[in-house]
Image 1 (cartoon, helix red, strand yellow):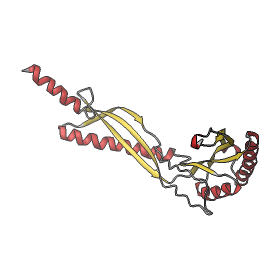
Image 2 (spheres, one colour):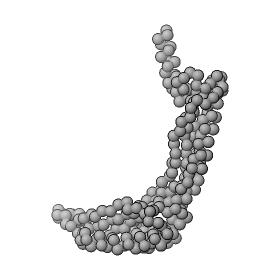
Image 3 (cartoon, rainbow, N blue to C red):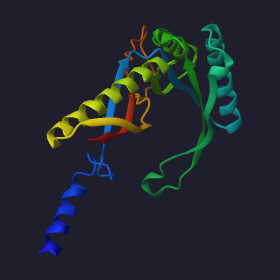
Image 4 (tube, rainbow, N blue to C red):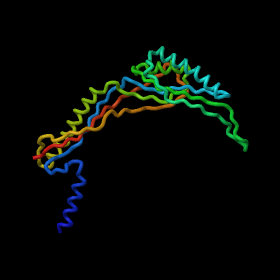
Length: 227
């Protein structure tokens, strides 16, 4: 009889493992905390695409347009440390070879992309308009973040510990025991930002950008003595 009952109890214990710790005199619980706030920094990848009959001509055309884009960034007050080349490539262009005709080289396309970090998210819309007017014809992605998330993370941590305690007290009460001293606390989690991404070839004047909210999260695992 024991050989059939004990395995069943072991299976039941394994199903409740997230609640009860390995030590029979302890209880472990995971708590979650989340604080939401409006992001104050934006990052955008912009680029210039140019085509010409030869690779040299395409590079020259691209470089001329990128020069005006960099000038626009400087006029916007974006420091050089906030601008980084993200991609640069030269692609030969061919005909499709329809009607059994052989593919034929028609020219070259040059793409030059840079990632720009703007430390004032409120200026993103006007910055995009200025960059497009300066010659940028590719907007490959926009993301948002919080420059100083330490105070928010501190609140999320406190919230996570409170959440873990509330859960532990519920289980302890149901089990007919009480919580004692905390034996250990371990942490995981962190910032979990939404990253809206889109691609476009041109933008209208007075572009409106919606940064939404950013989530700063914390996750803790707490172990208590029980008695």
